[in-house]
Length: 96
View 1 (cartoon, rainbow, N blue to C red):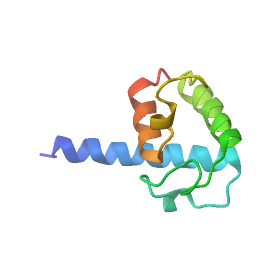
View 2: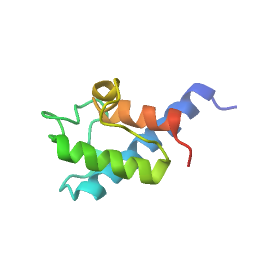
View 3: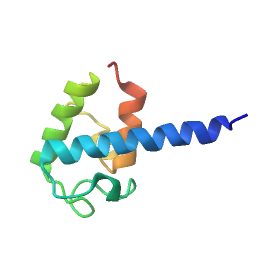
View 4: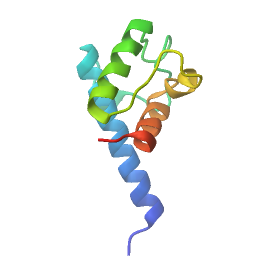
């Protein structure tokens, strides 16, 4: 019998890697998606994305997962703080 917590964690990790691949592909980054630390910052230090990159990520997330991320959303700083926070937000809100 498998542990539901470990299954959830494994599926969460797999989804985080899916989002990492999506970001790398959308932005043509020369980074191995598997090498992105899920807890590193996306913006500025860490992955080093800028505001234009974040807009592109928001567009591709919207297209792929049916989530509308607006520039004036009060939680954007938290949502885009790391790969893990972004993938958790997408998983909780995706429609596709």
